[in-house]
Amino acid sequence: MSGALEDKRTATRFRILVEIADRQPAVSQGEIAEAVGVTSQAVSEYIRALVDDGYVDKEARSRYRVTKEGVDWLFQEAKGLRRFAEHVTDDVLESVQEDAAIATERIESGDTVTLSLRDGLLHATPSDAGPATGVATTAADSGEDVSVTGFEGVIEIDPGRVTVIQIPSARSGGSRAVSADELAARCADADVVVAAGVEAVVALRAADVEVETSFAAGDVAAAAAARGVDSVVVATADFVGRVTDALRDAEVLYEVTETTDGADGVTAER
Image (tube, rainbow, N blue to C red; front, top):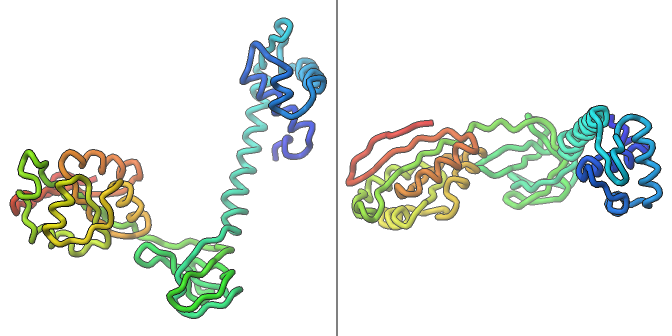
């Protein structure tokens, strides 16, 4: 564990050395004192000790530089702090955080529940069968929301599929160049349909397809895929690049197809 977590003096020493590294070579002891929350006299004493230990070089009055030894010590302390922070976020907070789920049947506060994803939403069932479980902190009837904490195990998720259907821009025919029947058929099996671009919105209206949203289509599809939900993104040609950039950034597999005047062909897959 980092020494900065074990005693106050080491923590103050760490913070002062960080401030020196950040401000060097012109170092104002008053500014450091204000940043760290100690007196200027205390900063002066700490700096003197850091110089004696070889962690800081004094070049002139109010001019200091952190030495290689000082940098190495900061790295070691920072690594210890990072490991501790990861333990807190990954182990401690992960087990005590609360999240909401949909109760599949009557649940009492304190019940152990088995967790699963359905239609991209967390569901809770009174059971300890797992593989992912938690503890209900509220009571709920079937279909109501219930608060769950004490998560253990892993919910297995098969990533959702994303299909990007490209349609022409208005200058190239837009929604008028798209077969409404074909578009409706292509969207029929998707859990979520989103649109990118005015032409896409108009084409989906003509096909009588319900659209989840016409904003941040790539991000929405990526979020859906992460929860095992299949989606179709209908995107005007000018917007396809933005959509696929968002999907690539989220490391989501997708395919891009075209539909113009009833034509259908896969143009790319990643």
